[in-house]
Length: 100
Image 1 (tube, rainbow, N blue to C red):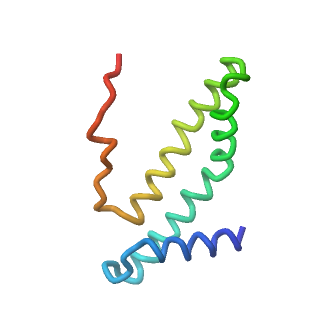
Image 2: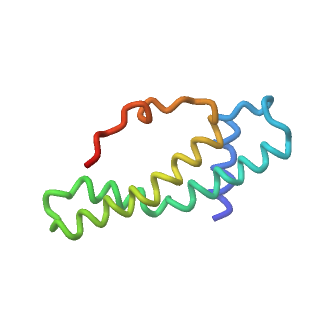
Image 3: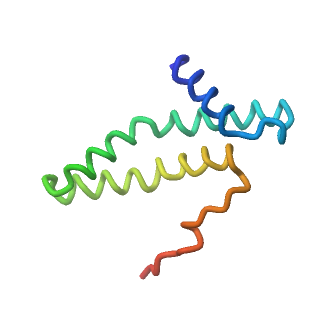
């Protein structure tokens, strides 16, 4: 996926503050960003399809789509975000759901 990788690198460079990082750190973070986005790319459209058709799917099919997304893709997306904006406070982390 060299074209996608190059496009993701350009996106990274538009978002990140290049002056705040050394050239080595910039390159490492950029490659981490590309890896994390690419590793969950296939799951994003599947998740959207799952959400859009949840009422038509059986519960077994539905929960697997959500569970897979939650345990894999979300972690990659958060890791990708952290490579670009490590100091950005995630407001969702301050609102923790009450778990059983």
